[in-house]
Amino acid sequence: MKKVNRIYQRLRDLREDKDLSQSDIARLLGLTNQQAYQRYESGKLELPMRYFIKLAEFYEVSLDYIAGLTNDKRKYW
View 1 (cartoon, one colour):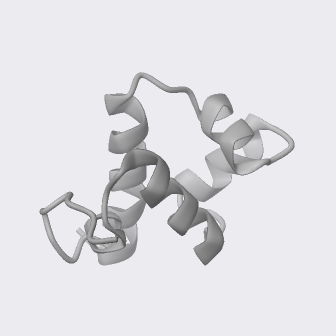
View 2: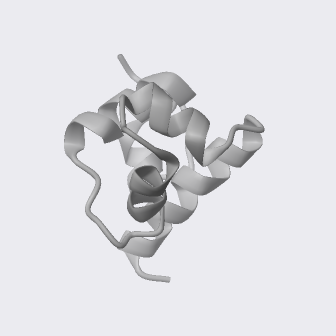
């Protein structure tokens, strides 16, 4: 699996682990609708770094975990 695909797969897995919808995450990020977030989660649009940071904080995981650089979810901040 490509690293880029792994990133978006991890975002989807984290969201589903918390039983959240794409609409829930769109609201968290201040997006106008679910379709906007869906394009990010599917990898059709590149997710801005500020959203990666916000999601890492929300899910309480490291950016390295989201990026697929480690399987260790621990955050270090």
